[in-house]
Amino acid sequence: MSESAIEMRDIDRISPEPFYLQLTKIVEEAIDKGEYSIGDRLPAESEFCRRYDLARSTVRETLRTLETKGRIKMVPRRGAFVIDPEQSGWVLQVAAGFFEGEVDYNKRKVETQVLEARLTTFAGSPAEALHLANGQQGFLLRRSRRLDGRVALYSVNYLLPELEHVVLNSDVMQPQGSLNRVLRQSGHIIFGAHRSVEAVYASPEIASILEVPPGFPLLLVTSVSWGQDRRPFDYYTSWVRTDVVKVTVEAGAVGKMVQETMPVDRSKQREVKSRSVPAEVGKSRSKKLKPKRKPA
Image (cartoon, rainbow, N blue to C red; front, side, top):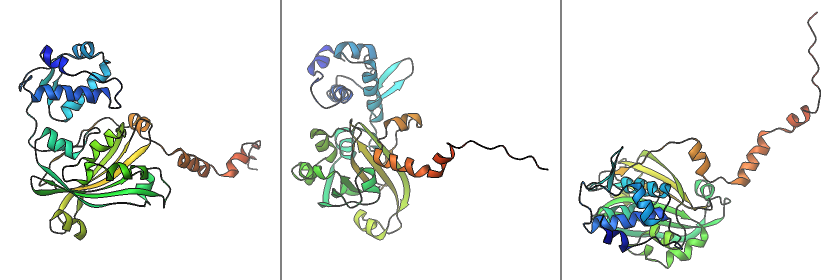
């Protein structure tokens, strides 16, 4: 990267956007403007740290994000190299959504049709994921997305009720709108997310929306996203046509890391604990155990 490209943008220290995402955009701009060609090696981690006054962990998160997006390839003991991004694909990463992945990085035409946007009562999985009580109101957003003119996916977002005005007064309601971007601009930046993918067959209702015959094979993506305060704010389900868009899943270690990062509804956790310990157990601990009689 040339010195002019490095100094073209700086890290905004007061922005709510994470530093690693800001650096990701800076590097991508340099690639898009030809400062880097396919096969060029990016500066070393230490160089990024020095020039932007960032922690090494932040720079590494930037490089992981760039690799997830298909912009670079990490080669052990050699560094990060610019590669040709895939022609199509939706990466199930934390920071970017379907719109950003296809429009910003793969230069494809995405159009959105809003099918429903209103306050309604949530129950079951949506309420549980957002830590809301059954019957509590939330904001429902149903949309279909077209990729280069073909229906690619149908999604249903369940959002916190206070996000109603944020969405309704934004470009999310327009064909080129991005919910992920609008949420980020309103301060609801994704700090973590849990996403699952399963193979399903299209029901008659879903098939009609996706313009496929009933029983058509689809991928069902379920996700819950939360902010730095660990409060979930977006739960969604998406039915994806893999004959139109390829879904790439970024895999990582699970277990302790997942337990530490996933938000927990503390009130429900206390309820589970209180139910799991019967009253008799507590009473029995205060009694002395009598030795069993030996058989005569």
